[in-house]
Length: 161
Image 1 (cartoon, helix red, strand yellow):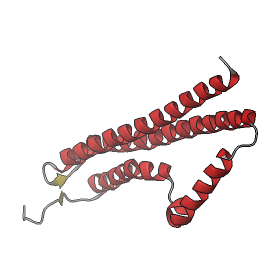
Image 2 (cartoon, rainbow, N blue to C red):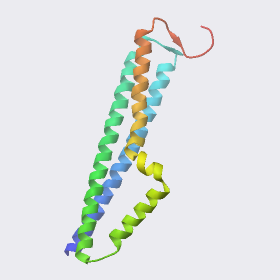
Image 3 (cartoon, rainbow, N blue to C red):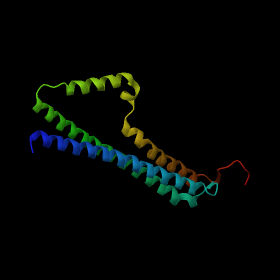
Image 4 (cartoon, rainbow, N blue to C red):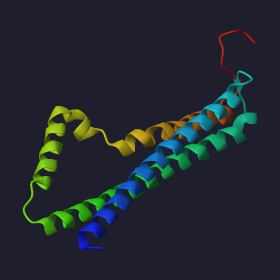
């Protein structure tokens, strides 16, 4: 096996691992959101929020926090593999000598950033996949406050009790 073949094999492996971690992140957050929705339905089943809902609310909080941590961890692993792949590609390019691959990729990135200025500068994918489980955790804090500190039962419908 030549050096170039090895570099390509390593590059392929790193890009596959990066895609794998991104898929795991998407799947995990989807499962967290599905379970979170189920827990919210259980909390609101009787149309009231009471101290009897506290164990379910705590479970919802834990689920949200685990979702945030797992999403960030998979993002970190994705970025690590993407960086490794970039190094492999640059090493392969260096053995080829002067090529137009690197400049072409940089040009494509700059053009994409020009067309999507706001998204390129202000929106990060790790935030997109971290916000939903974070919202579950924050909702559970609000529900906990309602269940523990309000002196009355909160009715979730407008119908009289």
